[in-house]
Image (tube, rainbow, N blue to C red):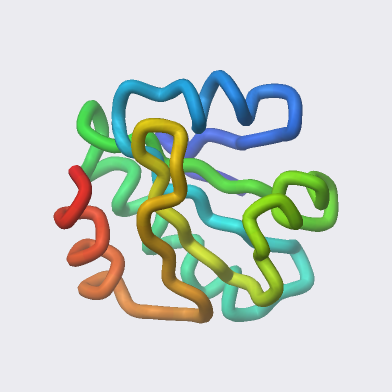
Length: 109
């Protein structure tokens, strides 16, 4: 489902791949049954290609990785969060277009 440059985040790799990343990380909190999540998926894949080498971009399935989603107060999906230096520094809840996501990424990249 995810593009070649989109990582899959799990409870097992969260600390290393997200919190320990030297680059900013965009996390798409999603679920397979979520229509707005499916709408934002191609945008996330485009951004992963466009920001390759500058920002790590990946997805976390909230149904499979519930504890991580709960830890960050994810109540609605899609939620897209930017992590920098191990901290959640920005987030968007709900479907947004590419321009909004680019603006958020550029503020932290």
